[in-house]
Length: 198
Length: 267
Image (cartoon, rainbow over all chains, first blue to last red; front, side):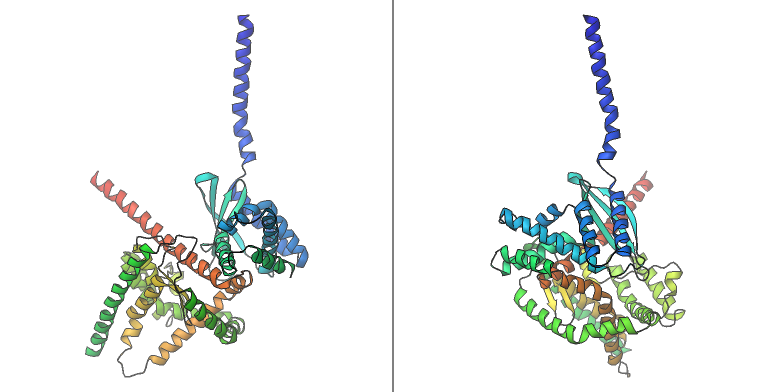
């Protein structure tokens, strides 16, 4: 009896040890390296700009936004306090329109690939599982551009170019527009949809 | 000589008034703290009015001029012009670096100015950078922001200046201070030659050069925003805050190192 009991204890111990030993192996695969995420995203975008144009490029950029960025979180953050006021349907339409508008903006932003490269700098882990990745976009002429990436749960949640946050600027832009339309969210959503369709 | 001294004295008197004004303004922003997300803009209606005039002038005259300058003038000539303008701005940067409590950096900036003004043929060639003297650009808005005990996003009330563009109480005061302390403006004040044309040409070229470098960013912001005024207000505030924050972090890091050095000396 005691023999069995001790065997059970040994088995339990072994199982615990096995789980503990397995955890660090599982962990890195689960949480990818933020610097690597940024590097891969940049590489993917450069590849798209080099090879694709027009609608094809826009679709590919949208794919990058949906796989590498946390678009729902960014959209929610960009709408700020108006998110709670919006109906379920308005939220869905808003997120869709923002993603399309953003993909369109990015695909038009870079006409042709101009030999830019991205150098990853310091990686700073912050509170609430947030990680900041510093980087420099080196241009063929002129000063390099400072770009910082905010990452949470293996997704990019904000990009800051020379200190200007994409999400914060959108929030200021959207909230001012909503206020000018008497606090209604509907005009903003229709405007974004109209722009996305253009 | 007396004329020059008098001019400097007059400038200092005016500067004292400006500093007093800056004090009032900064005292004001403590109560008007609106945080990082929303910019305090009590003058929004007049600001938007000035913005619409600025935009009309920009679309009709200024932007086309900047586009022509960017696309038609050879790149090497543009670099030369930019170097000359930057060189003329070095003394103001050095003065600011002294006020920022960094006399060593100010000395480097003055060394740059002396090297580029002589070997670099009146600043056309940036020889100093190839000698390892890196360029910095400081202004009084940043100096005030460095010492003001508020979030750098808080620059007092937002201000749309005619022709110049986005600013705020802090940076507007800074702009005035930079103008007042500029040695080129002071030293050319009472001489027999009329330097006004040179100064106007300098400010004009500065404006065209700066606009030509912001075409891409501003076009992008305008195209991708539903309220361009609000988007620009936010972007301007964030960009300036970032520059000041960078400055503060550098100062803190240096102070920390000096503190440790002193501790090591005590031990």
